[in-house]
Length: 259
Image (cartoon, rainbow, N blue to C red; front, side, top):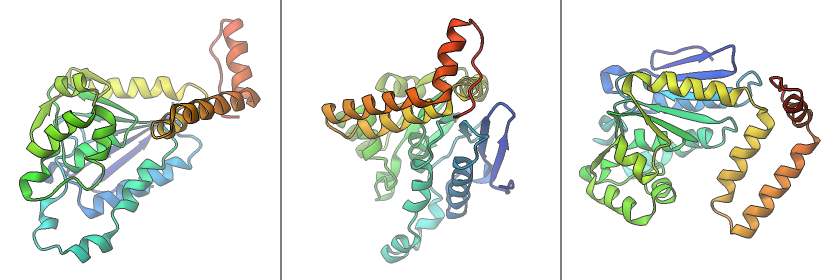
C-alpha cells in the first residue's frame, strides 16, 4: 500500500508496521476517506507475512479527535446507513496481527473507539479519552458503548457515555481502559519497542493468543477454557514451538519462522 496524504504506512525490517494517521488540520478526525484508508491498510497488513505486529498512532500531538463532525450536519438516516462504515471498522477487528495503539493527545469519540480496536493501548501522560457524542445529540456508533462496557464495566461506562466527559490517561489506566501510561515524548518509541518484542515471538503463538483471548471474553468460562486448551495443544505441532523449547535449553535466542 502506498502512503496517502491522510495515512502514512511504514513496514520495518523487524516485522513491525507503523500506521500513522495524518490529518493535522482536522486533529486527525476520522472522515470517510480516512476510515477507508485505515481499512485498506489493515487488510493488506493482515495478509503480509513479513508483518508480525502493528503500531497505530496519530503522531506526537493527537491520536484522533473523533469523527469529522462536518459529515453530520446534513446527513440523513438512510445516508448514514448506506455508508456501511461498520465494514471499515470490521477490517481492523478481523486483523489477526497484534495491534498497539500509541495515543498522544485526544482520543475522543471515534478516536477512542479506534484505540479500543487495538489489543494494547500505550498512552502518553497528557492523553485524553472520552465519548462526547451525547453533547451533539448522538451516541457512540462504533463500539463506544459495547467495547467500553467490556473493558471497564457498566457503571464507569455509563458515567462516560452519558456525561460526555473527558478523562486523563492516568484515570483511564486505573479504570483498565489503557495498558500503560508513559511520558508523552516516549509514547511512540515505547509502543515500537513493545511491538518489536512481540514481533520477535512465534507469529502462530501470538495470533492464537489474540484470537483465543478475544473470543473467550464472550463465551462461558467452560467454553473459553476448552478453546484455550485446544489452541494450546495445536501449538505443539508447530516448528516454532520446538524451536522455542530447544532455544531455551540451549540458552540462545529463538529464531521463529512462523511454521
